[in-house]
Length: 303
Image (cartoon, rainbow, N blue to C red; front, side, top):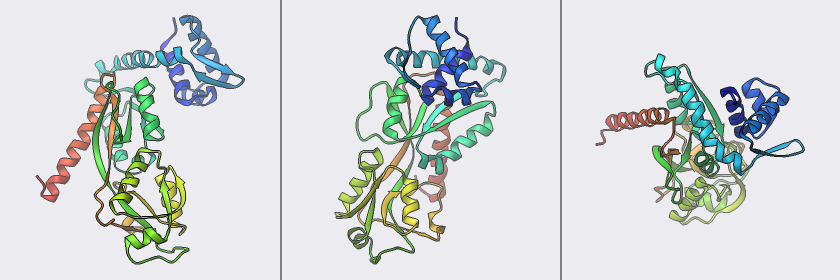
């Protein structure tokens, strides 16, 4: 029967899609990882990966194993929690938008890590739409994503954590003539659009619709960070979420302008399966942001 270590190796290969990358995570050579996967397949009498030369791809049988294997590993690691009282232990695999890691989510995560030093968190950066399928399959314990623009499968749950208004960002040293008002800037300056196929891209389209702006399309990217870098260099303007905890107001190369008649916000939340073995972790993340929201409401006098 395969050991817990082999099951962890299997999950590492699933996450990385590569024997070599999985080996770096678990401390083995690519050849040793391959041997462990062969051993797992022999024990199960199943082929869980399709191989073509050096590539290795999880097949249908393998995808069906991800959630139960993750559950077994989680339950094994949770045995240590009996000794440690209420302390969280073991490994949690979380997907997150890079922009969320730059902003408020990182604060919540590191606060949790300080409370539970024996908890290991593996973070995978990516896009909201990609994470939804990986959470549903059990490849990720949870993911920090924007609010889905469509209905989720009944097996998934999205809980709001915090919100970010959409704003217009413009360079302080543009390589073009910069108009004086936000609407004129949008109509005249090169516009760098967030990928319209992504969940955040849908929000940008909504914001443009609300202010009835016709833009001069320049380039389309799927990264807030890349867009901000290009705007800083003076190549164009863009509409992006105003990232929580990022002090753009002090940026010497960037200006942040409100959009007239626009009330679109990007709501960032936690996506998880309705039932999974890492619910204590996700509950603590949600509790952190609930308390943070209450503190903010109290400080601003809101009720």
